[in-house]
Length: 81
Image (cartoon, rainbow, N blue to C red; front, top):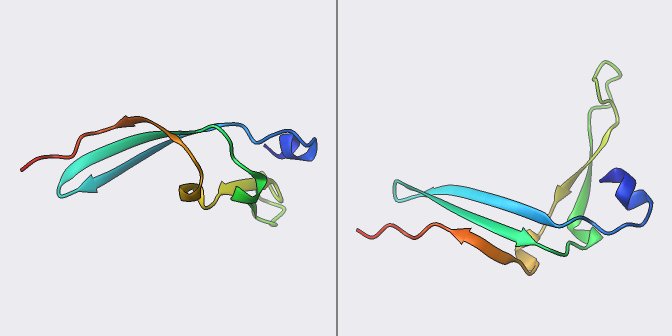
């Protein structure tokens, strides 16, 4: 991702799988985000400790994804009592 952002390339699409428990039953949803603007990425550098295998490696976190358009690919049905 770091190399793509340095060259000015677009952020790749994202498949996100959400799983949670609701009233004792596991629910699941899969979302496809085709377009992710750069302002929805937050820098997260790893440890500055030189003993760390990836010291100062740049990572990214996705932020404010609920504001972006997406396609719902799968949604488990709610459990009916």
